[in-house]
Length: 295
Ligand SMILES: C[S@@+](CC[C@H](N)C(=O)[O-])C[C@H]1O[C@@H](n2cnc3c(N)ncnc32)[C@H](O)[C@@H]1O
Image (cartoon, rainbow, N blue to C red; front, top):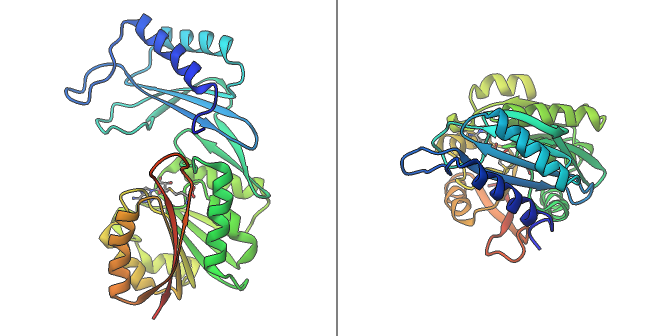
């Protein structure tokens, strides 16, 4: 099943609290209202459970009621968070976070590594599938042990850290500050010292590529794992300029993957392997890992 067995019950409780509050749901038509999203995160290996309620602003009475009613009924929740956002974008992302109960992060394990993930950091939704996905990345990369690797769109540093023992050095690039903080802390907690993480908006290509290469060296291999929208054309251009020998591209959206691969393969790369991974069973979605080699 996709959902944690408790998710529907917690949702019903939050729905009852929302109805009782008489505060309206947020409307994306006129941008009024209060209640916006509920996000559940369940770490399958450690069994930790995060519930994040996103509303337009902070209300102390609502916060107290959420804490008291939800924690009394669902003590299995290890992180209860109330986030607020005034953004008009329909994304479940908090600009401010208020920890109502438990820890600010949940911990999940992939293979021998442990990852602390905060509410706003990306983490693959299918923990057991993630090991398979990351093992496909390793297989496609075919590491020799001396590579300098760049991991673009690295999130909480999970792929960087997972492959760190097989290469000389990894540098991860990510736009969300809390994800970069998680990545740095995860490296420390796992005793890994050959990974670096850079906060960087890849909408503008790889800003300041020259100083990045001066600092971290020219990459032999690139791992790319962009969001559903794929890469910005400036980023594709920056990748062509970096000219790594091999690229391993992970994608959860075959449409934007095809668009971005077309540009890379019209230029310097040949598509050599494609491996779909069923990360989202019982849905029409598919994750794909591809290998490209420089011509
Ligand atoms: C599909 S996730 C992959 C994360 C990671 N590789 C993993 O396996 O958990 C995509 C990541 O790209 C980040 N991202 C989205 N837009 C970005 C941008 N413009 N610049 C840098 N990172 C971005 C997101 O915050 C997210 O962490």
